[in-house]
Length: 132
Image (cartoon, rainbow, N blue to C red; front, side, top):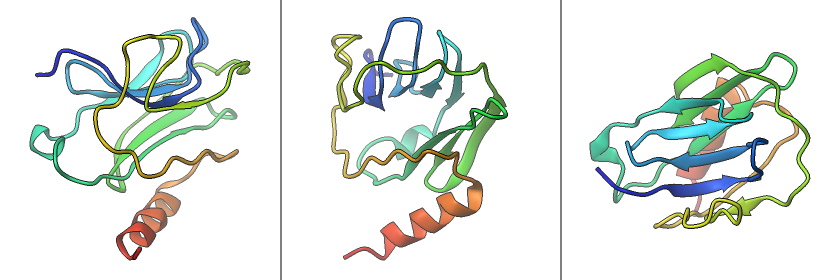
């Protein structure tokens, strides 16, 4: 088990979270409110040396959030509403929670202004598999 946080991406603010990170228990957590999160623990054997599409979605209308791991739904739960963000987004390192950075490669990050569904996540995954 690792002993640190691997920060993937987000808009870090104290008590106003919108962050995606791997935590010391190997769980991938997506925070959308003050400490509230959805967590998914991928199979341990898949965490190193493999490419994965990781998608975290938040639907502000329903409060639902989800984590997709390599195009499959890992976990979906209702959530508290996220408040407005006032800082810039970060990829691979949190400037608010110092010492949290991603130890590996992140090839692409995208933000949409709508929550993606399972079909869209599957299409994105399939398009990446066929990329040159």
